[in-house]
Length: 303
Image 1 (spheres, helix red, strand yellow):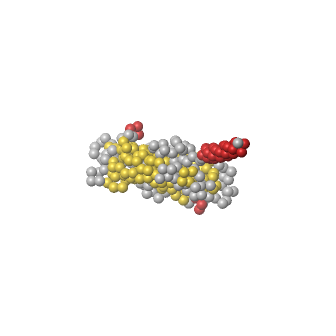
Image 2 (image 1 turned 60 degrees about the vertical axis):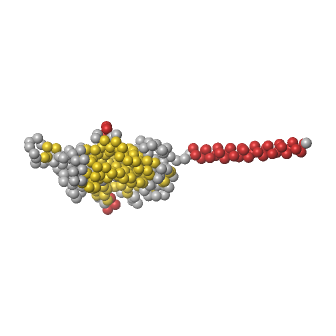
Image 3 (image 1 turned 135 degrees about the horizontal axis):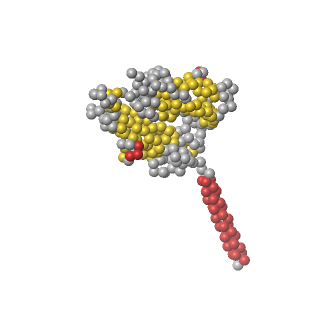
């Protein structure tokens, strides 16, 4: 009987130890899950581009939304982009379509964060303005580090120029492009120390252009580069240009350069002489600097 009791005791003890190990394994798994790095779905860009004109004057437009996940060692899993439209910014209530993205896995080893370009299409009737909104992760399927950067809006117009009230002639109000602001930051981007430059372009007058807008960075050979704004710019609108990055081996000399919009005058403007912004030199010890560019006129059509 003693032997049997001992056998039962040891069998019970073994079972308890095994269960304890199993529980420890589960707890360990839970602990591992608690330190999982959250991804971030960022809607970087929303571009409206005309692709064709129909017989009735309607424009067929392509709506391109670019999403990225900049968080290293994270993965979004699948998520949905929702495109909507409306007659005004406060009345964007009609669904165009939904598009699914399989996922954006950021290994941290790539120079550029993983991205996806998602396309939608729409038709804009003649003489109208349509406001568009795209919402990334529209169904909140992904637990993100930042939920506040998933939405972008843009508008597109086929409306004619405004009449001058004096007859059948129409006044083309035109555009006047200026560089309004430049932000320069030294930091770690994609795992390497770089200098980030972000320009802001403003249309000072009441017309619009749908042409691509070229932004040039001029100065020493190391900053002889260019960036583009796709889809043009609307009346009295300011658009943040895409960031450019410089990797400098020499960190002693200050970085001095200018930013010029539409350097080749491909877009007809009311004033072609106010497109340049001289940026304050960025020193070796500087980490962040904002240049508010002085803006000169006139901006109205010169008659």
